[in-house]
Amino acid sequence: MSTLLPSLPSCLMLMTRLAACALVFMPARCMRTVNGAEVNGTIHLNEIRIDQPGADADEYVELKGPPGASLDGLWFVVIGDGAAAQGSGVIEAMVNLTGKSILPDGYFLIGESSMTITTPDLVTNLNFENGDNVTHMLLRGLTAANGADLDVEDDCVLDQGAFIEVIDAITIGTGITPPVAGAECGYATVVAPEKDAQAMHVMRCRSGGWVRGSDAVIGGDDTPGAVNGCDATGSACQGDLNGDQVVDNADLGILLVKWDFPDPTADLDGSGWVDGPDLGIMLSRWGACPA
Image 1 (cartoon, rainbow, N blue to C red):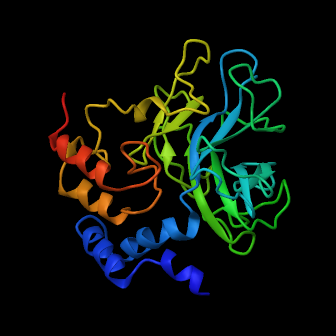
Image 2 (cartoon, rainbow, N blue to C red):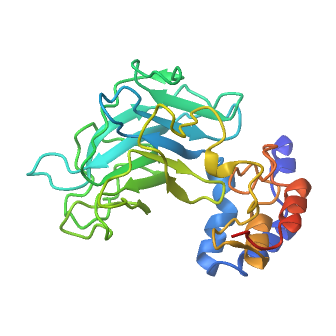
Image 3 (cartoon, helix red, strand yellow):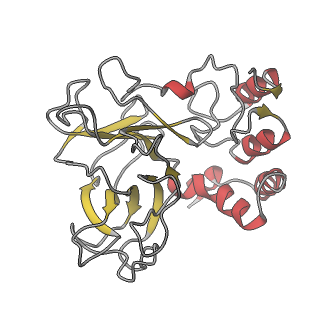
């Protein structure tokens, strides 16, 4: 037991993070944010391709997290509309990640054997659906089977009991307005389409937000196994952690909440840890982002 004590944050450290978080978030969200990295290890979805012009050879999902972090107990799941009688909330794809770990480069790539742009770390059949609202999720402790309906009431809220925890999730939407109850549901933040066309490729930025990537693979901006384009270290707006185009006290509050954690959304120098150099980068970018 004594060997665990040094890894536990002090009460003072937690109170400092909560105080910083209060500058930015509601108290309940602050507590969840402070504890989240400790509970979840900051493993998250990082880049996804569900479609491409021509044959879909390069469908993949990339996870990012601390090098060597265990994926035991985690499942990658895609939620869609299933059969007409089931409605929304049906598991359309699932991958058991037990026995796997984040690789030394901080990434873990799940893809099909047909991939041309790189070799997946885990080869499996994905066959992602496109043309409907789909939610890609990282779940802990899933007990349901492929094809199970996790939203029996079709109220756009996943039913309790089929899994322990949602680690991360993103909805790749088809409509300009967010999905609503009674329609094809989205169960997470929605990456909306452009000109009514669903995104084929999405990337998570260092700020934590998602952006649409290129449709084409050849000559596009796919970066499986490498830093996403919206996370370029030379970005003139590095430090804008909340995406409001200004580096200010709100971003400082977010950074302090994540201080001394291996959280990639605030690790500005890519060292694997949120610490003094990241604060230095933020202060050097202080003020409005360049136009």
